[in-house]
Length: 330
Image (cartoon, rainbow, N blue to C red):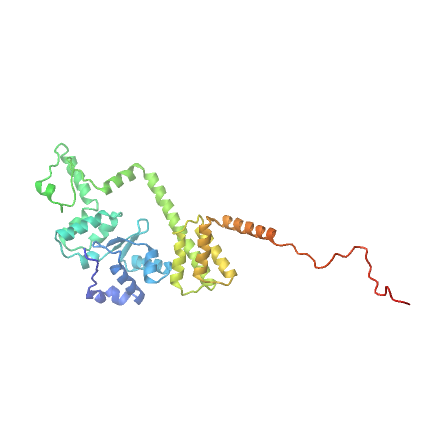
């Protein structure tokens, strides 16, 4: 499909937009509707870090806006585990036309959605019947209907019609027993077999996400309170990217140490901090302890190689006494 998104003029007549939204809210909502990650179905993957970079905001500001649009305006939903965002009224404003190319595009994008609840969320606002039916086929409703049908006619295998067998636009295929083959069913079976493992994995990811938020907050607070430039948002974003895109084992501690060095030398600039980080990374110094040990070794080696100081002239014997009147006649 073409890479463009339409915003209707009715956008500005919406009471929520015109009466409840601040100018910052309107700017953020237009971004959610038109950014390069958007899809034909109104569900797409995007990180808060990417939003902050595109908009020129801090991650804290994006987090606050996301909560406002989720809890107050109730116009979006966001799954922090899969990084998927769904826009509530996308179907009402954009999904009006059907046809094989459109349906094929919608079907291919729906297959990639990891959180089925977001599909149901968007489907509620779709007015065109065939598109809404396609959305609902990914929500588990037809699987439950199919299971009931199998219980009633367990001995009668399902036989696909010629239209279903040879029509490539048909949204899914069935086995001889009428069981739909798709990725979501396999995932559900795996979750049912290993519920403890799934819960444990979710808890670990949640804790990891919370820790990243704390790390970002600590670095931003240090930056703002130590004269690196409170309004320099782009520099903050570039520095925060080292939390994920570096080989350091303790990225937050290493970044803070580099910032402390920049403060001590009165060189509060991003390129100076990045230069320090690159040097440490090139020397495979991946923790603060390794960095400090390396600095101590360099200091010891420098002290050993420093030249010894010698006094100029000859050494004076220990018992020598100076007599200024020696050789003078009395």
